[in-house]
Length: 166
Image 1 (spheres, rainbow, N blue to C red):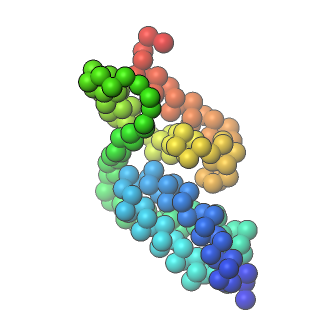
Image 2 (tube, rainbow, N blue to C red):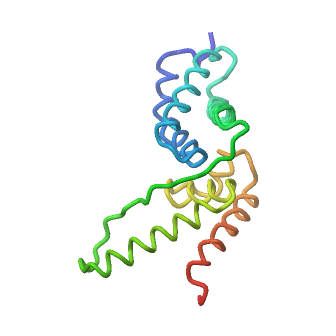
């Protein structure tokens, strides 16, 4: 019996990987409930194939299965990404003008983010929201660090369009 089939190992894999996998899937589909469902389905597939997947390959297996499940859901449909504005509580003036400007900026920011290519958006959000390093992103997406750097560069160029004079 593979070590992945041991309940303690499987549970540890779930604790370590579930949140990041869910976030990765959320970046693709733009819906938290859908991402959660796909993440759970991916772990079910891992359990079903635990004899074939050693623990060191579980992360790659989960990400690949999760991505394939996502592609199955959106097959033959154009994906329209909608992101909810993430409100961060920052100290600042409580004036209505400040709040309006902040809301307008967040709307423009998320519009720019949602118009990025999927590859650039995923890298940007994994870095900025999950706090993942370029090396971690490269490992997760199974691409090179240079590819991550290039995608982040393109994402940041898109963000800079919010302030064209800088």
